[in-house]
Length: 407
Length: 186
Image 1 (cartoon, helix red, strand yellow):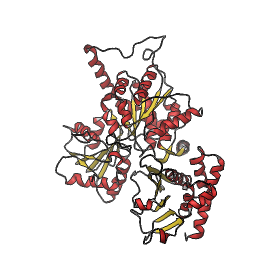
Image 2 (tube, chains in turn purple, yellow):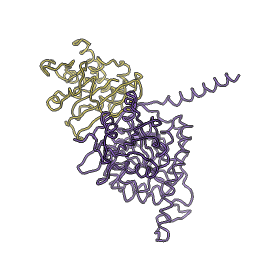
Image 3 (cartoon, one colour):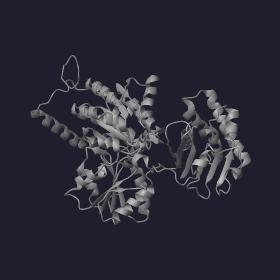
Image 4 (cartoon, chains in turn yellow, orange):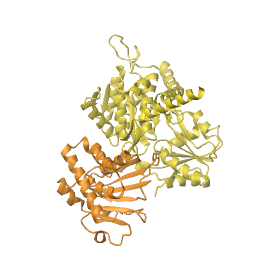
């Protein structure tokens, strides 16, 4: 009897997994993002092309032209305008979207701070690319980390599956918290890569992400007049900024909660909890810390080194903002050496993630933490380089910054 | 894992070729990964594209350094890039050329296949875009099912080209497949 019931349950679960996996497709990353945005149904899409983001807004234009997307598609004259259009549209209480990167993201900077300060739930994709000069169209992560203080939640995808999934999480978070969210995916390395992924169905998307209904009194509405963007005097500005800081920091609980819900609906988790993913860190002597697509290459190297009896692991950072110290320190507790692998640099200092990890570990971990910068401007990050990092961190007595693969 | 590196010039459909190979492999039940390395974005600039094919999801994002197959869409690339870089003893190099391997690249120890893809494509399609022809030559070595190959061409070119041109591309692929099967020991 019990066995029968158990069998029945297992069959049910198998059936569900089969149904979920049946939408396994082979897509280009940009195309997959455009498809998920179609299912998310924003009311307004602003578009200004910039490599390597262009395919996303191109595909959205095709979706609009074919009648499959019921959104306003607004071609703007610059990224500054694209961000401004989203600010205005979002302030009327509707769901909005755009994608950008590099110089385009930096041109948006002033507006990005405003969007966060005004508590508007805008979601954008950043197809991470290097920043000029010298001009370079290829991947690194300098663009987004440069505006990390703007007040946006910042999430990083390792695969195109994660890029798709993170957009769903992003809108859910944005609209609950009234905070903007940026989904980061490595330009070219993900945006231009074809790989298998499971495309969510409209039914499942609706289940996880309800239609957006802005709360009355939070948006511009002639029937309920409000002022958005008023002057804040010295007696209130600091309080408002503190509230923003508190809300972003405490959003980590909601990320975990929504990731659990996501798992229920889609049958897969985004990393361990939407914040980090530990890969063989439990007994690791050396832990590499990284974010984005390079984590895939690192996992491969971890497995190869483990075969050679080297205790190596990876901590993947999914949520860079909020930067959840407790989760991170917990995962790093047993390591002797921590190599932080950055695709960006704060010039005159070190890799940006490295500084963050050191801050989080201060007074909490007795461990060597070192900054390794890789892959700037599309410099290919090879498995050999990752192995070299594991080798170097154990040997090097200094705490200086390493540029890996730099001739 | 099988790794493929494609060399050509912008406008020859190199990236599309990588995509079509990968889509066909996916249709055959494999788990591929395909991505390009663009030079500057203009016609004529050297372009490299990569395909990896495995039975499980490919996590590593590194480019292809030790190719099992090299496909060269434009023989003029031989003079500007070391297309044989990282080749293994049993690597297969497929070149779009009407010359013989001995004349084109003397002294090379890899298995070199020369396919007159320009000639085939000009006859069948009338335009010197050789990617689907080179696909046929490649498919003669790395077995992909005919059904998946045709489907991949339709999926990848379908939204931009009309049926007549799609059919011609399939025909060019088949001609190259047959030409290679007849002229080389597979």
